[in-house]
Length: 426
Image (cartoon, rainbow, N blue to C red):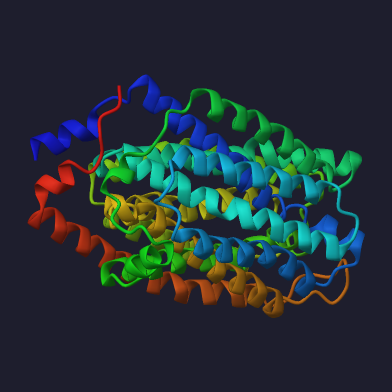
């Protein structure tokens, strides 16, 4: 027990800080590429004359292609140096984002989002495998908290700047910005990150297909897959319509929209490290359960809002994001402890794949539930999405509880294996 406490409070080395920071930057660019579709949603639907179902398809096409990519790469994910794998998929993500920037029609947009998803959707799973390889579970709450700051930073800086660029030079311009930032990050990874290949020494599956089958055949892993898939459903179902709901239902102006995203993003930057530290000090499932209950309450309130003062909309967004982000940190830290070292890449790839596919269905279904009669009319049935998310959240609480129980059982039965799960990096 004393060793666990010491591990939880041990300061990160300078190289560990670099790894966390560079992974957070990759998260920033990938998350921004996906998240920017939400605030650009209103602009896109009006400029291209898209229906809500068409925009839902544009969002879900990224998710479906990312899910397919995760399954295709799962068998190979543990057969290469994770640094090289990260560089390969990150350069593909940059190319796909550039394709988004030069698109001029709806079919081209769909194709561009598919290409971006094929590469970008795998980066998160590679990053998770790197974290699981380099950090003990007693430290991963803090690591996940800092990595999730990439999400908050995308709202604080990325989305407001993207909206400004879109208003000045068209909706394609934010994608040019992401290409520039991601290119710099790619070069830094090439120059500074060390090889991450300890898993190669313990790898026994030489055939990629056998490795995939071996991974998905484990019952404990399947519980983790389902738990992470359930987590993505609510966000994918609700977030694509955030800007359209704010503008058309809550009467937020296009000029106020960047501030709305920025304020909720600032709150994420403050909350995520705090939640990460708490997740390492108290039971991770308890933290997840509290955050989930908070999110359920806020989802019901927010999706039933009618036009209110802008200050109240700001506060509600902050409270809403608190619930969503606070449950992700402990949940990700827990699920990262399920796979053995030799299976981590495959496990994270399959898990990410199922998340993306489930999210793709959620976005498509959300586009069929939510209805907008004209370009400027209020969204209808948005509160129905809220009630569906409540039901999904209850199921996810149960699934994460099962993951937590599995990990605690293994820690009790194999404490020495748990302690040797990751090296100390100087």
